[in-house]
Every structure is written in structure tokens, then in C-alpha cells.
Length: 292
Image (cartoon, rainbow, N blue to C red):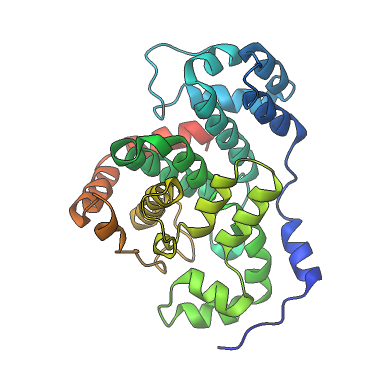
């Protein structure tokens, strides 16, 4: 396989397909990280974007968090969720608006990339809750944001579709094809974009390696634990066929996770079975969250 000649102009055009990070989100996250900030201050900032505010309340009231009574205000949501979870919900709300488009060459209709992202987030959150509770928020946010790079990679699929299809027909892992053809993967683009957004560095690191957590040397690190949860969430999202795309059957499972964590193959199968059995109520919950 020959490496394609990718120019700086190509990369610039590809990245232009990812909407800029809105100032209101950046400021809200900054307030959340300031111990002196009040929930009312964060709510006041978020309220400047009515669509984002609506999405935050939608997610806060969804089965993802399962509060017994309805949350009716941003300030109430922030107080109940706490700082770390509020960060995750804000990023999930923003990601939902970013994903609201068709990716023709990934074979994803409008809304389907949201489904794939949120199903992966849902499962990653459950895995982290069961095995790595200290990184539950990081795992959920990373899983939700893991597909941001696909918006940019769509540019390269459009331009080199035949070359990609030829390699897919050989049964190769999609991220390996991306690396060999273009020199970078969708996950690496996602990681780069997240770093540019100046949200927690750990999110970018998890997104960069979630396809192959074994590349991390420290198997006890929070990054590794979150990457494992995201890896499982991503693979299960693809196996269910919910929001399936051109690459859904072309990612392998990093089986070293079964040696390096308390998670077994049977646990993986249990999460997969649980997700499939919960259909259609599960997917209806996800669709309600993302408004599809």
C-alpha cells in the first residue's frame, strides 16, 4: 500500500469541517474549574446559548443519569450533577450539535453518528462505573467525543474513496488503513482537535489511544482505565449495528485488556448482550437524548 500525498491544504480543508469551539462552552468549562465559581455563574454563562441550554437539560433528565425528579433549570442541574459530571454533560450537549449532519462517505445518515457516539458513551460509562469509578466522567466524555475526527476524515474518504474501499475489502482494521494511507487516524484527529479546544488533556489522551489501549505502558493509570472503557463502548456500539458506518466491522478488539484488568471476555459479552437485549427501549432512550 502506498502512502497518499496529503498536503497542508488538504488538512486545513478537512479540519474546516469541524465547527469551531464556541466561546460560551469554553467560558462555562473555565468557570467550572474555578473553585470560587458558583453554579449560578456557570448557569448564567450557559444560558447565553439557548440550544446548548436545552440540550444540557435534555441529557440531565435522560436515563444516562436517572434522577428520580425532573431537573427544570440549569442551576439545579449543575448542583445535582456536580462539577465533573456537569463538564461531561456540557461536552455531550455540544457534541450532539456538532454531530447533527450526514457523513455520506462513512455511510452515516444525519443523526447516526450521534447514535454511535452516545451508545458508545452509554456503555463506556457503565463499564467505568462497574470497574473504574474514578474515571467514569472522563470515560463518558471521551467516548462521546471520540468520533469528532470523522467529520474531518470524511474529506479524505471523499477524495480517496476507492483506495480506502480496496483496503477495507482485505479485512484490515480501519484505523490501520487510515494510518497507512494518510499517516494519521480519525482518533488522532479527534485528539488534536480536543487539545486545541483546551479541555482537560486527559480526554485528548484517552481519545488518541482508545482503539489500542495496550500502547500505554502504565496499565494502572487513569488514562488506561478510561481508554479501556471507551474501547469496550466503541466496539459494542459497532457490534450492535446502531448507527453502523463503513468502518463498523473493521476494528479489532484489543484482547490484552482481558489480561490487564478485571474485565473478562464473558464480561464483554455480557455488556454486548445487555445492550442488544435492551433494544429497542435502549435505542429509543438514546434517540430521545440526542433528539433524533
